[in-house]
Length: 545
Ligand SMILES: Cc1ncc(COP(=O)(O)O)c(C=O)c1O
Image 1 (cartoon, rainbow, N blue to C red):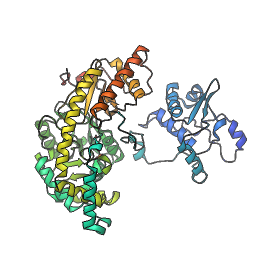
Image 2 (image 1 turned 45 degrees about the horizontal axis):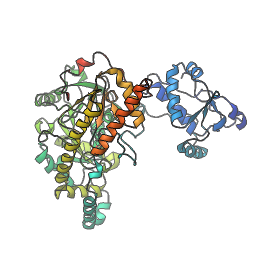
Image 3 (image 1 turned 180 degrees about the vertical axis):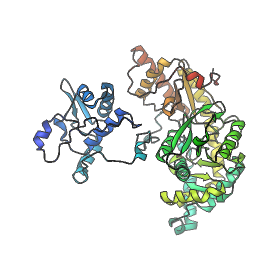
């Protein structure tokens, strides 16, 4: 405890006096050992304090950043970073020549919280379990949420599919048909393994189109990749046991393994996929998370040699591989490559698939294909979470697959994405080609664009901020990896007109900022990159020009 947050004036303090108080900061708990950055801890704790309704806002002046930094033993930029967020979100208000105050008109969430505070006041920051605080991501479940309003605004977020192309009318008709046929049966508790018809349909699809080798009894239906990963992590990892994850990595995977208490070991990626390297027996991974069809986010396809080596390695160390096959259907230079699971004769690969990219993400349906000896364990873990996925959606999906709509939808959107992809490449070259080398890999729904000049990174951060483009810098997905500066651009969810408009807007914002000599001082936090970067990511990377 370093001193201080907003002086929580107890209820015994007269209101009048409290209003005139310059806040003191006794309640701030800054934990330097936490993976949560200090500025974020400060921001969160101040916000929580305000939301608790302790303050009669208008008279409450906030100490200057200098005073607060000295009191808390942290740097001024750290305090300023927390303040800028609170100012931007409307919790604080700057008054000319007077300083910073708690805002007169607080955000709606604040007011609601203040009303609730009479019954639900807490006298301290809640003490939450370590498994929560050790998660690296603090956006409270909003990681992939672009709100009901977006898109169509062009934000180039990776991982968003073209949901407006989903055949809603067909889905709705099939839903009515299954309800008419099965009626109340679909309203009861269902199997934690998943509906048999759906498991049969998925097994047939995987054997025919993904080169998998499986029986419907090996399938466990889950709530998307998120639950697939969590189920495996909780079923297979004891606290402190080693999990290998790719670096850079799908940020939600990192959170899952941190939450499960694993000792996370980030593994680098080369042109053949995850690097196995040397590893002592006692540090052997119990679980290895990989995206072999299309490494997220770098886009590498794991070579056959590396696939075989990985299975052999897992077998030799009594570990399991979790294969995330999230968007293998979207390969544009030929048929999708067979999955890792199909190569596995050792019972070491757990395959995980999701409907989020092929159909739509709010469906929250995915599946695991487990080696037979693991199925019951996975079902047991899945059942303690939420019993099962919604039976009506499962039955509708089974029919969607067996009646051929699934395959025709995949075919149609793959063609659409192929067109958008080519168009994106052309437009990107036109608008931003002077700044970036676009990495063109044969699969996936996003691109990596490598900045030619590292010093342009803050400029682009600001331009994205201005234009509301929410693509992420590659460093966002890195754990230890020190890569050259780059951005990840999703392209699938937007029409050609929108792609052009979005890229043109970004280019124009960059131009304006350059004219004004701006570009520094972005409020985004960026990871440093090192000169070692080029040795990490081979310079032979395929570039678009
Ligand atoms: C690597 C990866 N796997 C899986 C998913 C999908 O996750 P879910 O099925 O939980 O929606 C995503 C989403 O962006 C992803 O990037």
